[in-house]
Length: 323
Image (cartoon, rainbow, N blue to C red; front, side, top):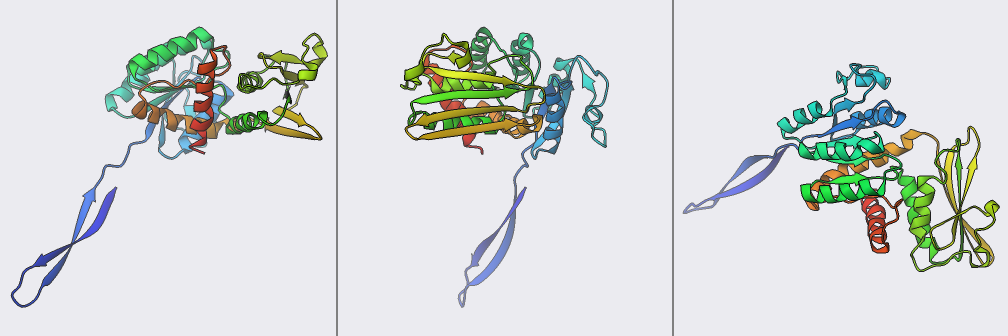
């Protein structure tokens, strides 16, 4: 980018002052696009991520990794009219090496499996790339190991339990409401019965716990299965509704004397996760520069109270800054 400005030069004269305007051009280098590698493109979210990254300003798809669809064009797999001329590879190292040689900023987006996340992040860091991880059911040991590794490697790493900005906003509103109501119930709806309660519902329940509030004091017993599952130690109940064809949604119901306050967030398709993904890619690059350490956005696991509150602050307020 070139910046133009005027400079006024004064030439001394015995009779009068003479002025000469000079135009000076200052050339500043244009920041290069973030090179993004999508690992796990055979999943629906992987295909959506390729489309989102190719359309995002300041980003460039640099690689598509998967054990299936090897050799096919990443753009054609996603239904794009024009091929991207980026073949699907099964070798993450080859793509990382190419980006490292160019000395450009890069991010690996990981949609793979819990068993491969640690090695993927470690491999990306070895080539100087940050990571954004969106993989359900990560074990606490993996998260802890990643935290230690990324701190030593001075690399940014985001582990996101959700990429939905709406879900994050719902959690923020629920935390604010929890200080004003004594009764709360979480109701989630899903189209299939796998992984219930869901990661989102458990995260909300954990967020509401350990805030100095004991909920549902008049009905705190957990003996009746019809009353839902109590998550955490502060009486937050989670109810799961499963019906084929039902959109994924989460409702948090608060009640006080004479009123009911309800927060609800519905997900109709995977596209709702793309704004959060683009946000995460931009944020993890800045973490590498500012903090030189990993900030792990995962409250699903049973950590100590101090760390839960710390991660909660990073998750909510960190994302909110970029909305």
